[in-house]
Length: 368
Image (cartoon, rainbow, N blue to C red; front, side, top):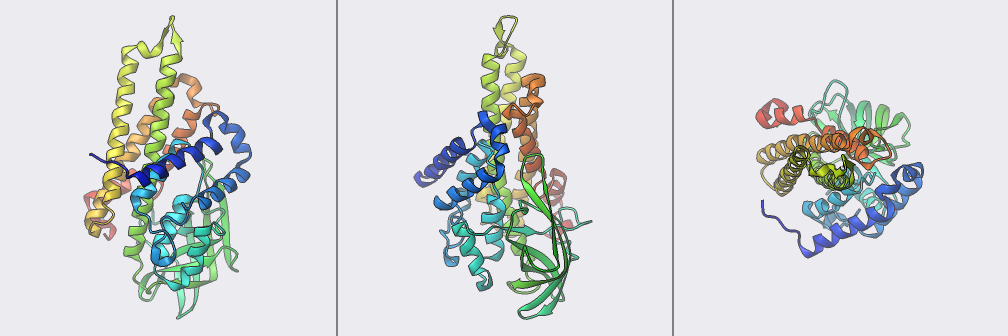
């Protein structure tokens, strides 16, 4: 696929690389993780200062109205430097879920200026990755609603001030806005192997605000999640780039029998295969991002195809990088192991390979 960033998008990509190199250099990653809270706060503050948090928010909602390609330019840099940020959940997914609703205007303004964080609770026990599986119950009418149920996995939700959750009303699947400190809400926080912090929610008569029209949320939820998936695809590509570059550098410098191991033909072939997987993933990422404006059925198939294949490519590149580094590749001291861990989590974020293959082959099974 022939694709080039505009001058403005190249500037976004350059600024993402500078921020990552300044705050999250790979050579000091273990020391930096010891200062995780301080550095993630500084990262979020710089993102707000650069206007990145306002970028995905629509102009009608007070944002900059940036495109999915603009977000992609940023996310490649995020992946390249393994920046542990909640940018996708907070600045991409949530604004797409609540856009156009006056009830969410203050929240969007707070997200854009960096004074509040939000996350989305969309998955439930026994529902797998099916966005249409909603047993969380909403009762009430008008501006007065209460929610009862559970949300199994809230991506990057551990530090959220607000949650956007799906619940079922008499009219069908609807979206609601809930404060993180709302009475009746229990937030269980946990950290994944890639250092990102997620949450589980238990709602017991929690007061909530209806977003949009009751019963009409599912198409908007599916589009918002597809936007989040495309942002993560770009992050995966950036991580693959960095993993391949680090591996090539290692092959050039590591010596056995008095010669660089990069001179061994079998290792050269494996490095070439990694490069091919990277370029395949890059093309799939571009194709999916550019498909977000297509009709829903076509968009879903393209995004699911990309999600499945980029996940496979990312794991392949990460595993090959670790193997080519030898036993030391598994250690936390080498950045390679961190890239593999992030690829593992990106592979299952917003749907596993199996889920998206099923969505691609038989979308009607999943209510598409």
